[in-house]
Length: 430
Image (cartoon, rainbow, N blue to C red; front, side, top):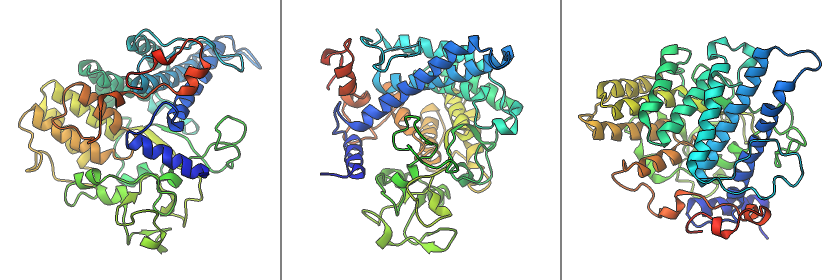
């Protein structure tokens, strides 16, 4: 019998190798997690208008609470529709232990996107700008986070002209900038910094009781990312050879992104050796979001916040929108701004390796820049899929990809428990 960690590793390996099916536990937990967020958002949206105790709440605060819930609901529905296509829609609080029986799939993806854009349209004007957040409010969603999400969704749909105004407004607002030190985006000491539009808040300060289940029955404000990825931890995810070779010669982001044998950790007290690396020790390991930069082991849990949207991503999305519109000099300028980070300072585009004489060449540079700048930040999957759908890939980056894997299978447990779903409603190929 496999241990829990071994089972999880096996499930993940099947996903990475495109050898999974509808019973895969990671697929199911992703589905459940997004609907859990949606249900909690639905409670807020439904209950906020009637909030009167213990004292009357100002209308502006009610509007903000509802806007924050709509932002999170839009985010979760985008996760679902982009991974599964048309999914069941629930917009009212679930009040029974058995959920909502007989909830069918939406008739189309457009139904989901209509709900998403309606939520974001209502949320954006009622969310405060980043510069208006008090220090103790950092971590709550600002208006720019919702604008960036809207832009990201429009780009996923290939609607660049609709994405561009949101990105232009964020950039013109000057509330964000690239931090001087690349790794400040992935360590604990500089969270909610000037580059971060939105991040999931984690902390070890409240313990980890119930953290594995995330059911709200204990303090579950920690992440296991470090343990999953860490070179001297489980190391269930290892950077691909293709990603490692993507970095240009002398790009310092390679060393900021990966640990390699001989690197120092634990505040410089220890050296990474082959004897304490799981698996093939000759391959690099992830450095982003690892706590061993300041301690000896990951200790299973971590309090490092996960940055969902950061300003470098905004600049590179803006570059792609400008390039799509034929504004190549503007696209190049945004890419070079990212490369001008104080501790990166890479040569400006165009380069010999990445010329930018036309839209096709400039898009190739944008694809490269997004891959190396945003590596390991759970962004590339949707980048590849939108470029594939839009016919922008000159070669297929995933060697064993087949079309059925453009979408995930509806979890078997959902089909078993939902009377409105049968195997006939399953995504093609599963």
